[in-house]
Length: 455
Image (cartoon, rainbow, N blue to C red; front, top):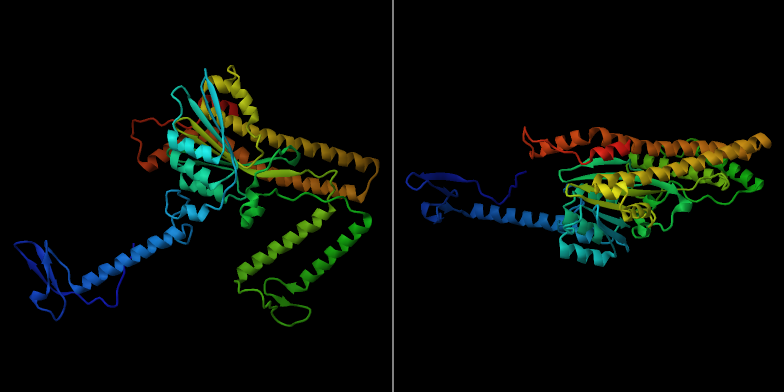
């Protein structure tokens, strides 16, 4: 993709073409015909040899650098477990996972509960192939660990961008659907009431740098404050706002004292854009902390947000990776154990995806019901005995409800896109990859029955 030049390379001149053998003889300037060596029809002068040596050295250095820094600038996008250096870069992301491998058909059902080591041994032994009688295989992974994800990526040829999404996903990421040639990938933000979380994933304790990304939207509220504490908190917020008004945050110039730019000797140099971003984040953090002290545990709704990642493969394999409570898939297990349920009798992997999405929606409806109950309690308290604290809590509930609605809207858009554009997206992917002919008909990932139930 580029050219490499060497200051030591000599200009190439005096080129002679032998008509009989079609051999090009190149002579460095100042040398005679005897100084060139012909071996097998190829002439290599001292300048060419130095150039080739330099090229080989640069290629080797690039290989070493990419091996130890797979995510650096200019690196290939995504996380490929086959790439050299991936284990060294992401091996620190590990935790004990609870893995269930369920194989089922209309007449048979089998479940295996494995840990990380047992799952890797099983994948190596079977190569990811399910029993001949099984129509669907569901691999449910509770927890995120590099050894399990790398095994899944290699065994089922998962796209590197999807693995990067799982390992580097943020709590504020939008729910989305990505189509690839051999699988469909869904990233869904699963929200649930904190009181119904049985056992949270310990991934946040593994990587401290990203620990804040895997928590809920807000931390647990403290106990209710006394009137004296509320007055002190209000006075503290007023002082903080006055200090922020005295300082021009964009230019770092003090308006009241006129001493020029404020400098912190302990702070490293940052660009003005980065300074503004950090100061804005700090102000938002202080505001949230002040608002948190004014909340009331009686009316506050504790919500936990975790990522849910789903794969639907062409061969009937469904993979779910989540950080939700360990009992996330229990309702589906009970349905699969009963032969006369639609999920079991149809043996349709896309119906299993619909069932998992249905769990996400059910948890969101629990949150809506809890908000409705708390708002009614606030309104009743205001009607019976109006207090400023109750009015304040009603405003907090209204703001939280708007935030939850914004976070759930992408899920509605995702479900609509799956129902409406599944086949069209599969055709577009096949056309872009060149694996479709004009007479060939491409099937979508979702069956007609699953689209009906998604409605």
